[in-house]
Image (cartoon, rainbow, N blue to C red; front, top):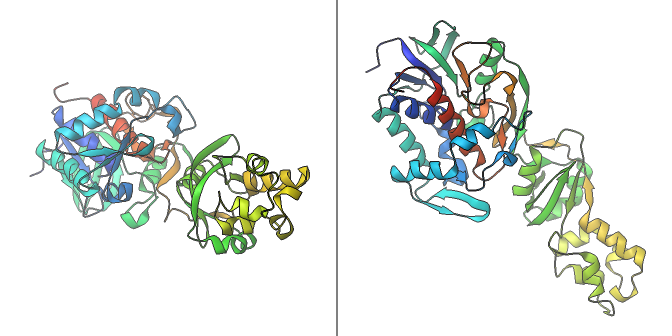
Length: 397
């Protein structure tokens, strides 16, 4: 049964940040209602980490986040460490494993992780209204939300609606629309952690490589990542590309080093007297089709021993410094996150309260905070939610 109105807080959005905030606030004794248009809560959580729930990263720090104010994330991250998340989840029965780069995945699946958050909210008395279209939001003093024909009031309103990435999981831009309605500025939202597309010429050039993957270093401006790249029928993907896509802007070039673990010049120097063809030598370190695609035929078919300095430098430049300009991205439908969002300039980094609208809070992906690939975004959802829940007035302290 619903708690008698008014509530202490109404949380819009039953994703990772909304549910974590709700259970933590309810644990403090606050009367909390959570509203979501989806029939099943935490739909994006259920497909996170390839269905295995990459729920945090041992190396989480401010360096792993994009935000117009790079200092904004520091307070929340300091107050909820990866080990705090581990302790919370393992106490509730989650088992996990550590993978490369400090990524932590559940062993029981992302669906189990989502179920734990939902069950804990209900156990602590939070009122979950799912499958309810949010029809109107007014306030403050108090905030009044009408959803599915039911009207609720609360002294505090928390926007935990995420962004429009992964619309197939129910994501929308409602959080941004409500933020604008309350007069909050937005940093222009765009798809992040998303595959990139290539123009017709480059797409035709790299088409034979579709399905091939290899480790690369990819750069965009001053930012670089070393991770696997995957060639697709429309362009490029894989962890390296997803990472750099969050920094890329339309019209900007990216530079790819296809042999970050070695140097072409060193390979040639070690085989200086060899009569093997250059394509054969490079084919020992790179996919043969990639070598054929990168190098002009005259250079690829030259004997290593006959290469002069200019040819060595040409080959090195093509392997270590290919520059291409993506035509775009696969958009929100393939994006794991939304870059940009509610400008943090008027949001408290300690309480996540809006300076200009008393009682209004914004958390998670709805904010202009975007994490790198590898569990950082779920960790931000939890950290921002915890800071907000701890600051909401009411309850037992």
